[in-house]
Image (cartoon, one colour):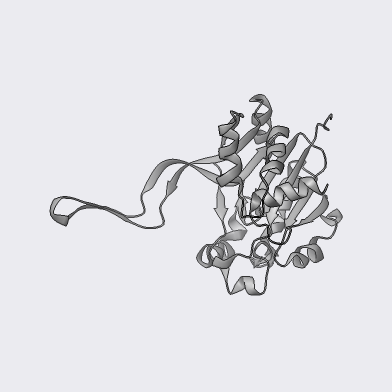
Length: 253
């Protein structure tokens, strides 16, 4: 079967967001209003995709899916074409969500599927990412960031149980994932085969399976700002600083 040479996006926005309770008792976690304009985080993600010419987007929904449908509709008001794929009952995890959307036709035939986490705000150069994916002829490309600052301090303990040094919130020289990746045809086909009734995730199950099968997974490093809105403290910080965020221009005329 010949696939269309186009890029689509799939946004993971179905999780309950337990770490953001009690806010998520009343909102889908990607729809919590932020900043003085009280705009949902998901609007920034969709606006970023549109800004880089990715106009066909599938929303992978679950918990409080009606919140998202009611706000965004078919996406015309935001310059995009939105499809919706409801997570099947009893099947959780990002891999299952992507596989379900591929199987039910919400994601149409495409050569490149950009998968985004709807609760991560990333000042990502999507055009550069797609250029990297194509130039590497990769089956998947993982967006990474260099270094990770621990949210806690560490201590080194020597002989006799005595602390010999402390380091407050050290930065580790690691390549950390940012919640964005591009999947090619082979990766999408494998995702469909790996879907199950258990919780299956992209990082835990799909990427290791790809490496086991010697599929080509490329790395794309970003030096730009990315922000995981996964806890109440991180939400409160972003809520206060969103007007200064590099992506604020997307929603501020």
